[in-house]
Image 1 (cartoon, one colour):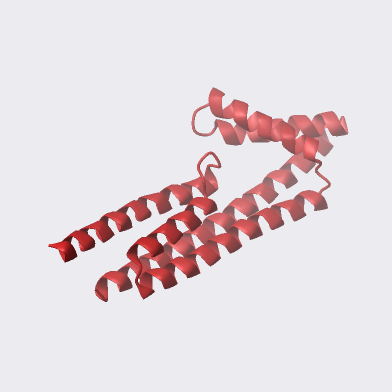
Image 2 (tube, rainbow, N blue to C red; image 1 turned 180 degrees about the horizontal axis):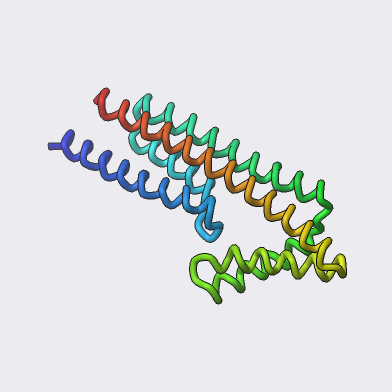
Amino acid sequence: MCETGRVDAQIIYTIIAGLLLVVSALGTIFPVLPGSLLTIGTLLAWGWLLGSGASWWAAGLGMAIALLGWSASAILTGKKLKEHQIPKGSILFAVVGAIAGAFIIPVVGMFIGFAVGLFAGESVRRREVSGALGSSWAALKAMGLGIVVEFGCVLLASSIWVIGMIMHFVMR
């Protein structure tokens, strides 16, 4: 009876971990949800709760990849923003625009608000539309690159989790 209860709990933990990994992948695209941080926490908890060699290997490797993606996203985005000399003030305009957009337009408002806020910040700074468009476009591409890198790493970490999950349950 105790062994059956343990396997059932492991299956429940695994299902919950899978659902959280889906949310974390969406969180890399929609920043309102936690992304890489949720992936790392989920894998750590899943590896600890299951406690097998396969679960720990998958969790450890997946956490390392998610951390790498999270870091690479921040570094790549920051580097591109510095290359195009986009100041923090324009980014602040973009963040305020994203927050307002999220409330005004459901689902896509955050993205639209970010772009509009960024353009507004750059327009105020540069005092010309063409320069503001160019720098805003460069900043949006930098953010998009960061999102793609982080999303790819979370998907890779989740794929490793699937392999670890299969190995864990096959070896039981």
